[in-house]
Length: 509
Image (cartoon, rainbow, N blue to C red; front, side):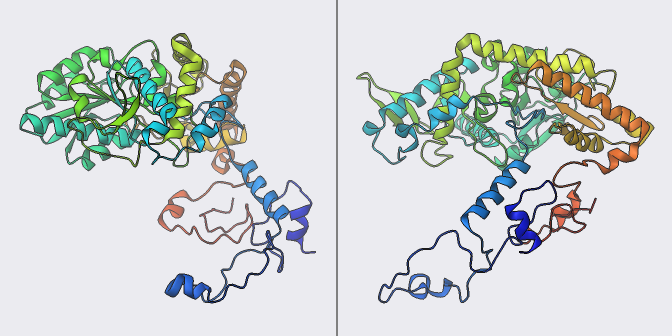
């Protein structure tokens, strides 16, 4: 028995072999009976695309591959395995009952091409979800089609373009603050508009005078996250949206931070004309790694006819159907969108109700301010004021005095059992760390996070070299991320985790 094969059947805490090292000629996961169909061959089925030789796949038994993937799952970090204070991403625990609802056979086995009359329950769910999101946002018209937040942004800009074109001029530019999420300028460019960036004030708010100076007859929209990207609710919001409307432009709210104001404030009441909602952030769907997600678009009554469709509607006879808005920009997603995400969000909303949603926001804000105050003497807040659901720290002093960067602190947090916060964003904060504890973390977890930061800063003072080497206890040590991004090799990885060479850019530490 080789050493790799021994470790495949005898678990230990050392480096684990790759699936290729577990390979043993002749082993199979499935032994299917041979079939002899006259005239049927790989060549006849696939023609020029048929392989001339067998693929170089590992040969393993079912039990070995099961243990291999189980081990890979254990190596992963997620909300179910530890605290995930990733600022701006709202990585919170998702109740399992919502997962069960999405797996009900009537939902999970529904085909998107079924006639409306055979899918009345699903259409009712969509109709009621549209209505609930309209109530929460203060914007009466809702499309569930967009697949995620950036998709919702893009869809909103295309709705603005259609409405402005109907007035006779689509205009040419969209204004965003310098704290905007990176998807904002990308969506603006994709929608065919010029990006105009305005600065923030020293308090992290919109520079109102700079905004007014940038607004003109060519402005199509102003895009803003409120609460904003540094975790502050902008008290100038009514004056901001009024100035935008006076210029004949639309005010767009990025819904990434909706978790902070659920049941307390509505973007529609603030003067926004459109808002996307990240169901996978705010309303219970596990996310990360590219999906799943949904980014419903809520708009004012004036813009409702331009929404991407179809929408779920209810006729006078009590039948639900899919209907395209009168001047719709068309589909932005196949069928109705990511239906499984709708089910989870619906279950979340109905189980909590209005008072429960308000409690979500209150606890999220309380948790963030608790951690901010407890940690302020250890790592300075970039804006030392009451925050909403998230806040930004600056590691500038650690870098200047000890040579320890934000990246070092973030990597060391992994050794303490915490996923790192968002780092180096927003760009206007030097050595930024953005934390969002969320409402689902208990007080003990918040205290443990604070203690971890204090311990890491003490380590930085006593032994800064330790932080440069972190993480020390994870299956994969610190990677050469720039090298991996510039020279990716996603096909081959024939080395053990922790060795000095890796096709994933490992530095060997």
